[in-house]
Image (cartoon, rainbow over all chains, first blue to last red; front, side):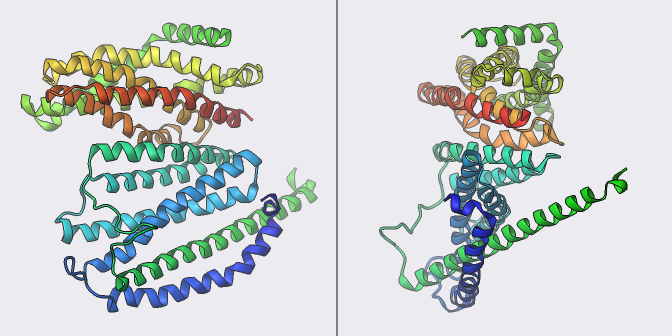
Length: 244
Length: 221
């Protein structure tokens, strides 16, 4: 794992997989969106509204997975001072916040025709909203300091505190109120028909590949920005008479 | 244990000499609670219905307001650097400071809460569970708040940022704290929810000083 702490090594691998994940993202969106939104069968209860779920469910999955990725990156950064892990965590946070927001918005648009209301204080909705606040807190803490490294370390600690609290909050909110239907898809069995699983998996693949693609772009631009900063610094250092 | 005692006594002494700070927190708790009847209307049964939730939410906000003083003064005058460099276990120092903070802000909230419950027309059956829930819940509030207070030290927008970091973490305490009181008011036993609150307190005592110490170390580095 320490091999990847070297930015050059990391970027060599990232650049190698970049065209593949970008390609997968484009292909999955290209096939997934028309199938999900047009050709897949309408649900016998939900009608065409079920199509919103093809955008909603993958966003929910990604929102949660990105939080764990962020926490893992933060842990690696705090324990081994692994600089690339920090960059990955930092680059993941805005994506996670975006997927959480997408999940909430799609969910609300689905809830209006299905439950008759945009928002209910149900356990899963509430914990997703809380996760959104976690992302916002992480982002806000990260750039609240003059010294960027201080912000990195503070927000890494916050991400870990958050990940310890996620199960506690889930448990509390579940105890508090439950209305959301249980997940119809798990690793071992499925209550869904194949016609609906295909677009769901395509969209999930599209979202995941999109995340990795943007992650690589963000990490790359972050590294370039650091390079530019260093170049400017050495430029200034090279002409002391100007600094006087 | 001597580190704990020394820091604890010092912080209590500071708080006693500047007792206005603790009083401000209590005053905030009172005024914020008193705002609710104006916002909602004076009907006694409506106020009685929302009393447990209102008291818990305002208590959390009052505790939140007191948090930025927890480490900020020591951070600004350099005491915190000395404490970190002293070679004593930092999590013990943190625990002492948070205990002192809880004694000087959490306990006053506890003391005044029945009076505020009376103004909200809460039925008598709720007083004891309210006190028990606050007694078990406010230490967790201070312990979790300590992590947040340590993380935002020296940041550009401390107070507002602190609320964004800490309030989501308070939700479980709020849920079970309110539930304890409400179960007593609806004739159920508040025992189980109080036990969950006690469980949170044990978890928080175990993990939070450690996380707070890590946050303080990176703040003074």
